[in-house]
Every structure is written in C-alpha cells, then in structure tokens.
Amino acid sequence: MSDEKQFSQAVQTNQNPTVNQGVTGATSAVDVPKDVTASVNVMSNQVPPNPFVVDIPPVPTQEGPMGIRYDFNDGARILLPKGKWHVQIEDDETDNIIFACDADEGWVLSTKKYYIPFRIRVWVRGEQEPVLNHTLDLKGKEVQIKFPVGTIGDTVGWMTYANRFQQKHQCAAEITMAKNMAEIFAGQYPNLFFTALPGKVRFEKPYASYTLGLFFRGNTTHQPIDFRKVGLHRTAGFILGVDPREEAPKVKLGSKRKIKDRYVCIATKASSQAKMWNNGYGWEQVVAYLKGLGYRVFCIDKEPVTGFKYTWNRMPHDVEDFTGNKSLQERIELLEHADFFIGLGSGLSWLAWCAKVPIVLISGFSLPMCEFYTPYRVFNSHGCNGCWDDVNVNFDHYDYFWCPKFKDTDRQFECTRLITGKQVIGHIKQLMKDHHLSAPKPTKEDK
Image (tube, rainbow, N blue to C red; front, side):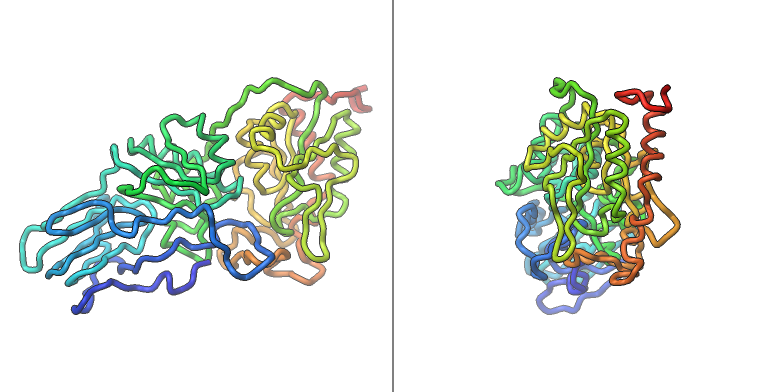
C-alpha cells in the first residue's frame, strides 16, 4: 500500500553520520499510508485527498530541557536543537533499546507508529546522566485516536478498541471519524470526545496520537501484526495494545417499531465485485424462500444498482426497496426490529452486528475469522477462497474486478459463485430454529 520510500531509514542531522544500535532504525516523518480499506477507487489511479486524515502537529508538542521537544504522535518523536547529543528510544515494557544514535541536531523518530510504551532518553554526549528521561504516561493526557476512513465496516469494527484504550489509560481521548459514524457513537460513549470529519480537531497539540487502519503489503510500521492474520476488526486491538477480543460497539437501540409485519433485511452490494455473492441465482432463491415463509423482505443497500463497466449488480426481484441515502440511525432502527439480516462482508453487516440482530453473512473472498463471529457465516471451501486474507497477495484498490488467482478465467469469483442458494437457506433454517422463530405463515413443514 505504501511506497517503499515510506519505510526508508533516515535521521535528520547536520554533520555527524548516524550511529545505529538496537532493534530497528529511525525513520523520517512520513504521511499516513493512503490506502487503508477494502474500498475500490475505479475512477483514477491518483489518490484523492482524504478528508478523514488528521495530520500530526509539525513540531513535537512537549517541551523538554535545553530546548529539546518530544511527543508520541504517530510514534516517538524527538526534535533536537544544536548540540552534541546521544539519543535512545526504548520499549519500557521489555527494556529493549529500539534505536540509538548520536546527533548534532534535528529529528529522531521511531519506525513504529502503533502503541508501544516508549521511553525516551537524551544525553549530552559524554555525560553520565540523561538530560531527558521520559516514559510514556497517557493518564490525563490529550490523546487522539484517528479513524482515517469513511467506511462503515472498518469504523464499526474498530470502535470498541478505542474505548478500551481510553479506559485502560484514563486519558482524555479524542476520536476523529467521519460525521455519519460519529453521530451514531457519540451519545453512547460519554467518556470520549468525538470530532466529526471533515472538521476542526479538539486537541491541536496532543501528547500522543494513534492511527487505526488496514495497512497492506506486509506493513509492520503501522501495525504490529499483519491484519490479514488477525481479522479486520481485531487488528485495532493490536495497534492500540488492548484486549483484541471482539465486542460489538454500542449504538442507540430501543426505537419504537414502525412496521407491524414481520420482515427480514438484506444487503446485497459491496465496494468491489469480489465481495458480492456472485451466484447468479442465489439471491432470487433466498428471497423466494423468505417470501414463501410469509416474510416481507427489505433491501437496505444505499444504491439499488451498483457496478462498473460491463457488470452491474441489481436489487433482487420481489424485494421491497428500502435503498437510499438514509442516515445510519434510520438503518439501525429498521435492523433492530427485523427477525434477522442477510448480508455480505461489508458495512451493513457490521451495522447489523451493532443492532444485535441475528446475521447470516455470506463471503468467500475473506475467511470467516476476518469478520465478527456469527454462527451463520456462509463459506464454501470447495473452490478458491480467502484471497483477502492471504498474506501472499495484495488487494488492488483500483481494480473493481480484482481476483488475484483466476481473473478473466472461468474460475473468477468462484469463492462466492460456489455458495448456493440451498447453502444459505440451510443457515436461515438453523438460525430460525436456534432463535425459535416460526414462519409468519404456516408452511408445509408446519402442517
């Protein structure tokens, strides 16, 4: 995802060459990697400005002795005035020296940008005692936790871990995220400060900041473990150094039911073709089965038709059209009164998880561990599958028809094409049995 130059080693000094010791080197100040989600940009290979990225302060926010400045915004940062210095960045938990160097002035930055209990020590060269000896202490400090994407699924998946971070460290935590996402969470987390983006941040000089994201191409600069090994949501727990066990975030529930009839919500669209259920008959079979049980079936996608070039995915026949650019709270209120939800590995499935509705989740391009747990996770192991979580391939954000092994062959998208209507209906039957749901109208099996 990120250019190799973003991983290059560099310490800014005036004259002396850098002397490296310890586990890793320092890096120059770099931008956050641009591509951090599964969303596809099919319009251009140029990355547009990201309205959800919050830049770190240009100068470290903390004042140390002798004109030294430091902070922990996207890693440990030290800015040195002219002098003869020796600097060490350490992991206080392990006592590992992560980086050490001599410098005459300029920047020393940690390579790692995720949570590490850093310790910074700076000596005047030749002196025994450091003039700066500071260990990261977040209690009561202003801290930013940044959600640099506008996608629903990622933001929902990461929210719990941001809250756990604040609880663990008792810091003043500012959560920066897209406006529509901040609206559904802000009222549920009074201990957090939410900043809706685009907009002005609350903390202009934070003591520390951490950027959540899915970082590609084996990036271990912004995440301690490749997200493909731990799951889309749990990666945030590892980035923030908190318990990675999953838990649906809190949203406002308890709305008054507006639709008397029993219904099921479905969402059939996603941001790339690999995420779709690419069985040409699947949705029609499932909808026919649900309507045969007497259910009303509501399609709650944002768009009734999505696609690119020669492939367009349309809302299934015989469903009721609840598509449109509705607020997420409206979606939540519709979902929480549904008997259950059927969707893909995309945002509305994650929103249904918040609404505490039983979920049938259909996906083959991802492995079941990628998303939140549901006992009704539909997956077919007979063909190629799990490319999204394969550390040997990289998702192409500019290819709507990405299929890394079988693109333009008869096997393209077989990961979901082999998932049949019968298989999904089997999960529906099990869900209804487990949740003691009888059909809205009697069926032959009931008679």
